[in-house]
Length: 430
Image (tube, rainbow, N blue to C red; front, side, top):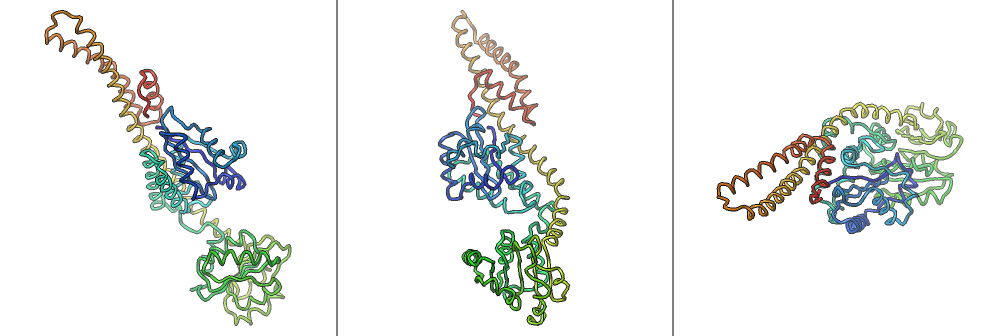
């Protein structure tokens, strides 16, 4: 069997392309069933996340689908033209497909190096393929080995050590300042995308209250409503002209506006510490240009971090993870070679049996033709003819079988195996 993967990720295609060819979880089983109907005899697993869409396929050597047929299937299912997204796709075959999956599941191909979410997503993809009936012994073995490799990498290396996103880093900083969060309030100033992502991380700490404000009241209300529907933390919008007054009662502030000038200055902030009775206040300014005047962070009860501060911590963690990449690659390469060798050995077994059976049947037919034409053949002579025929057959088979065993440890065996199938017209079941 051959193994293929066709897909795209955050590096090969922009989000505008990825979102058009993404598969909702609810439709994946139906898509896989349709794929199986179009290409009977194949196996398939589909991984679709916000950062990647990949279809893994196992099929007979001369079977279908081909790479271009997989692309056409995606186009038809998503009601697109292949030319609209094909430039953002990549494809890998056989050993490279195995290596790619091992890298993906081990999070070496992720936007956030070392994150563990992709492992769960790959396991879900395999479950969905099972429910659709499109997995088989090849992809089952491949994915199970990929999961084992990911576990080994996360156990033996430091690839998952340290936070690697602005939002998760902000949570770590908040934990250094506050021992508990169920009595803390959070204020979000602005409705920028990165600010919202950071806020979602902080909401995972289950604070007591969330306030949202924005120059456009409708956007603030929409964000508060969206978050209220996705978390148990009470959320409400407040008028933009009143948010500075709320600094006296909140504990964590995230600012992410599009202002060209600071929205919080030392002059407007001056009365706030006394109103708060100098309780700690965490200010997270992730706007560029900055929303909060740096001088505010000089006060004892104020902890001010801007986007560069958060990125510095993130980069330090990333350097530590990068140091582990070499070890990760060593584990993956050893696992790829071991898996491919085992699969190739399993492939050539049936081929050798088919080759021996092919020669045996030819010999039996020729013997059945010859014996009636011989006169007065003793039992001893008949056995001698059969033994001679068997010896000739074994000698003819010796070199090709020996070559297959010799090449079983690398992908070149597929070339020799396929040549033998074609030359001797053997059943193409692999």
